[in-house]
Structures are given as C-alpha cells and as structure tokens.
Length: 354
Image (cartoon, rainbow, N blue to C red; front, side, top):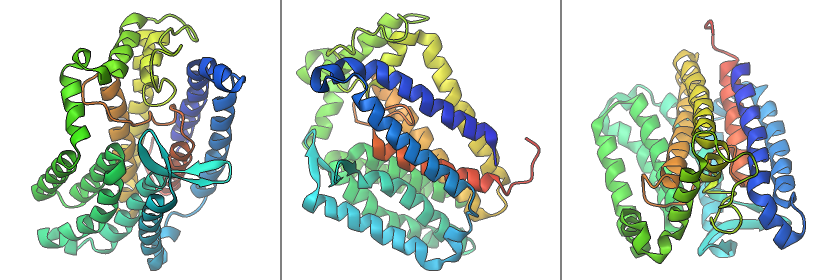
C-alpha cells in the first residue's frame, strides 16, 4: 500500500490529539475536573478508526463492487439513518444531528459522506458507457439529491460537502458543464430556504457590527496574535473561554495563535501532500471504480479543509465544519479514517513508480 499516505494520516491524527489537548484542557478542567477528558474520548475514536482503516486497507476494494446490492444497501441505510435522526435524534447547538448509542453519539451525516462516495463510484463505474450521454449523466446526481436535501435541512455545511463530492465525482467521469449549473442552483436554493443562513452572510460582511460575529472576531484575534512563529504550544489566550468551539470548528485559529504562520503553513503542506498522493493513486488506479472512490475522497478532504480554514479566516460565511483528523469529533474521525482505508486498498493495486 502507499505508506506515505499511511504516515501522513497517522501524523495528522497524532498532531490532532496534541492540539486538541492544548485547546480543550482548560475547558475540560472546568467542566469535568479532568484536563484530558476530550482527548481520551478522541484517542478512543482514533484507535477504532485506525483499526477499521487497516482492516479495509488489507481487503480487495472490489468486494464493495462485486456484490451489486451492497451500494443500494448503503444508499437506503444512509437515508434511513438520516430520517431516523429527525425522530429520535439528540439536539445540540439548535440542530438535531446525532443519534445516541449508549455513551456514544453517531452523526449519520458523516456516514452519508462515505456512503455517497461508495454508491456513486459503483453506479458510475457500472454505467460508464451510458454516462457519455448528458441525459444519462444526470441520473446519478438525481440519486444523490435525496441524501443532500435531507442533510441540508439541519446541516448546511455537510450538505455543501455532499453536493461538492457528488458534483466532482460525476464531473470527473463525464465533464459536462450542466452538472455545475445544477450544483450551483441546488446550493443557492438551500441557502435561501432558511433566514438564518442569509443572516450569516450579513454577519460575514461586517462581523464587528453584529453580536453573532463574536466567534469570527475572536478567531481573527487568535490568528493575528500568533505572528510568524506563534506564542508556543499550549500558550493560546483565546482558548481560555474567549473563542467558541476552539477545539472543533475554530481549531485552526488556535493553531495559528500557538504555532504562528509557520505552523499553519506546515499543516497546509501536510494536507496538500496527502491530496497529491490521492491524485497519483486516482490517475493510476487499475479501473474506473477505484479511481472514482479516490476522487470522492479527494473532494471530501479538499473541500472540508478549504471550508474550515476559510471560515476561520473569515474568507467565507461562518459554518460549522471540523478540520479533518484534527478537530474534535468521533464520528467524523472514524468515518474519515475508513475512507483512508479505501484509498489505501486502491493503492495496493496500482503499478507506478512512486
């Protein structure tokens, strides 16, 4: 398998645990009298995800394609879990996104990301000749729309990622501009369906003029105060109750404050190296199915990194998206590591000098 990807992923997970401890220790000591409360939970999820990643990596990825019913089971299961969330889901931050399973919580929208990648990869590869006609090319997008719309009701940020994954996978397989127009129209429609989403654009344009711009302002303070080399690991001031979601959506701001511009660029370099290796595997995959799986993962990781950092720097309106492998979030980390297992499985079958 591609051991450079394995190294990069494990390094990012380890780095994430270190940064998570730095960002969460103060709040955890106040709430739970345990500075390692969130780190221990994240480490458990990381261990589960790494085991799952290695298991999938050592399997032939074609097993997910040979059983024709598997893609449809994933499709139906994802929609079922998303609908179940509305019935028994637990609410947090004003949104109903989690299903409680004992001491753990499952976020079905995270499962939807890997589910839509596997479903579209199987569909596109099985209908590759038909996809040359633009009318046939629209069909897989129509299958993706129910998942995207259901997620978009409560979670616009994840909805945008699912839309981007679907668009990029279909566009790479059949480069028709009409898919892009459909994607833009869909995103615009979802944006206009809820008033609070338009309000975020107003806050983005002038965060200082709105009470809801507090998180953005504090995040920018953290980034600006870090300078070139930062204040030092663990020395952030904004994480001490000033910056909301410091251990999750805004963790990049704390990285900038503690490690400075140099540290932030190093983190970006790691993600760029990871995506570059994905591209090498996608181009040299032995078949369209393997290539489409990796393209879906590229879209997922790339868009999620971009949105998280763009929100932290106020480049785009605020929306809650974790930084891959680094932000706190058990479901996100586990399913992302499972995606890495799929990429590693595909990498075992390419024949190219690295």
